[in-house]
Image 1 (cartoon, helix red, strand yellow):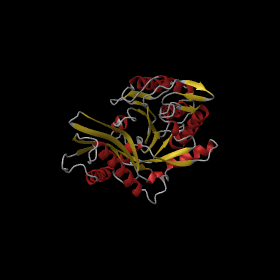
Image 2 (cartoon, rainbow, N blue to C red; image 1 turned 60 degrees about the vertical axis):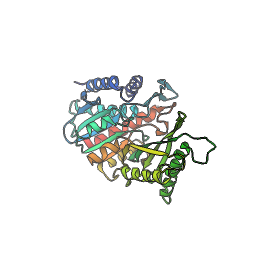
Image 3 (cartoon, one colour; image 1 turned 60 degrees about the horizontal axis):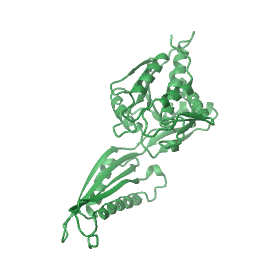
Image 4 (tube, rainbow, N blue to C red; image 1 turned 90 degrees about the vertical axis):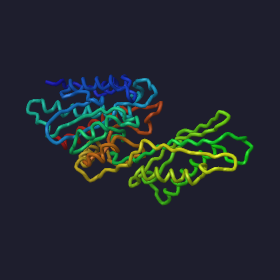
Length: 371
């Protein structure tokens, strides 16, 4: 018989106390596998390092969260009804809510007269979501074919996230022979700045008439630096662009390469020549799910049953939905307690009352699907 006692706040608190930077999640994965096993799941750590818990028989319902975090220590503590810690929002809190809600269903089926689950719940605490690799999600996307999927990301207890923008990162480098700063030719740093200005202008032109951020190209200058050795000067920058649905990142990469060529810097001048090289990486298309599905309807009922008025979100970031959504093609949404504005911040915390209410919503929705 599985143990049925679970304190959701104690579970999340212990998860927050176990550091789990991207690529360093092993200790937390082992803890979660042991905890899910104690609660009646068949549990293990898979070859990618994901913590997995399975219960029930029937169509697969995957609850895919991530257990890695970005750097930065936030002391774990409870203050004013808030639980602080790195990952409280993004995204240990949502995965702890998954475990807590699913454990209630597992416990119920083991009670006298309890009905067995009509679905196979698969809880996956994925690794390296915060890294470019999305290692955990890429590992599972070819190993499961779920009938529905819930992504563990902060949405607020009464909101459902149906889409995430795409992403493209570009590293650019410009080089040219050194010259006196009083010379008439543009310095190499000016070439890099001109490229950034061209990218920003292209995005602004694309965004004309598009009021929603989800439909816009959103550029950000993430880093810029320059230097030289007296003979050669160089400038480097990194630009990130968030992409709307319908714009493949490969297409944008071709456009940016064309912009770099048009702003100059590759042709010879009277005294010296500049050259550029662009490297595109972390290409990820946007993804938007259908909101007219049994999965969405189950969550809408769950939010209303908990006393809320449900709403929908489209996020400007990315998540593991971008990875598994196109591969699985099943009903999918992202859900979890927490304010995503607190992601990655020194003030990261979740309201305990919201966390507990999100567990109630999850339980209700899972009951609609699994019982």
